Length: 326
Image (tube, rainbow, N blue to C red; front, side, top):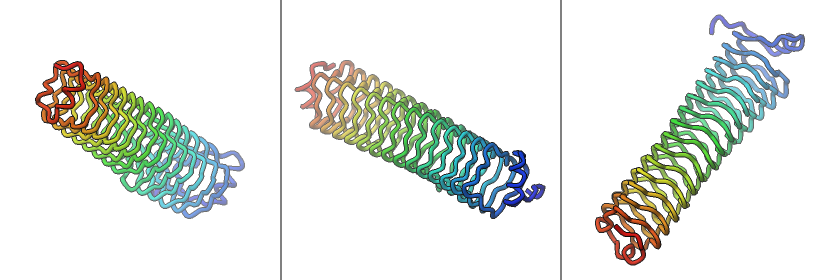
């Protein structure tokens, strides 16, 4: 950073107004840039610190490899900005517009992006520290593939059609997110809090949901084939038509869940709890239900072909209701 050229607000504006856009390798510290229009400015490979830039217009700005620290960019407009490989520390971007921005390989620490617009943005392999918050953000159509978001807050975020394959959300707070048709194949969601989340028709194949809390979540039509769901909580969840083919659900809680038409083909359901669950028309073909609990479950039309239902506990109700037993 010692080789950076120091720049102040007056000099920046003077040069910008005569057409200069390239301010790479510059250092801008302690300046106020509120409401300024600095579209397409290039501040790559620089340092920005202690800035106040409320509502600043930074459309298509280039922050590549720049360090941004201790700054306030509330409601700033960074549409299609390039943030690749940049570092952000203690920056307030709440209600900012980063739609279409490229934040791949960027690093975030103690930042606030609550209520930010992030539609269509790219966060491939981004590194986000637990202290950063994305509550109530809109990520519609964004790409988070292989991003690191462990312990991060996404409560009430909008994740419609998000692509987050192999991303790490372990122990993240994802309460009430709207993730309809999200692509989360092989994502790490261990111990994640997904209470009340809407993951309907999402792709969760081979995802790790070990110990995750999905109480009251909507996973209608979701595909969890090959996923790890051991000790996960699906109590009172909506799982109608979901796919659990070859899924591991050891000691998983499905109490009071709606599982109408759900497919558990070859699933491992050892010690799973289906008490009071609605399994009407569900398929448990060739599933391992050893010590699974079906007390009070509705199993009208449920298929247990190839399944040793006698290995389960509380099977009397199952035997009376089901018409497709092994």
